[in-house]
Length: 146
Image (cartoon, rainbow, N blue to C red; front, side, top):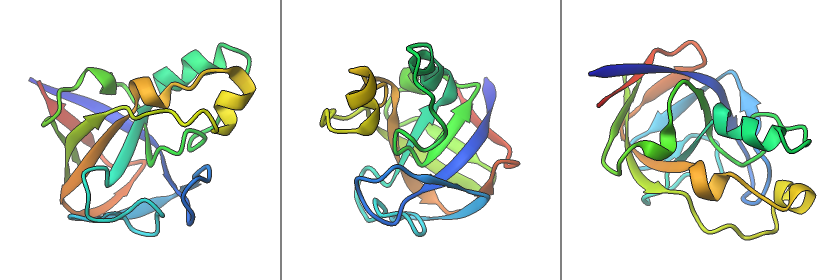
């Protein structure tokens, strides 16, 4: 069954360790990642995704958060990313991503963790590699199959 979701924000940073800044559109390159992003290279974590619904749980702790504050490349709405098995294909327009990893170790030095004492990215964020590239924007039609 095909399930659709939306891209709320596409986010990049020029240097690793920085919060990411939203951009109106971006190009995904196979075996590389998001053009212009510091984390893009040929490895299994070419792009990171985080659901805005999971960011909402952190907003409920009294901290103001915007897209990219968890250093995610793509902020989504309408998909429980953490429940998708490794190997799941995500279709963002003509681009195809493959989920490669759930979460990551929290370095406890991110700005959100320092403010709140918690960070949702290590538990709910996912990483993917780019199988087929192309341009994406917040208007891009997205889906996955379950």
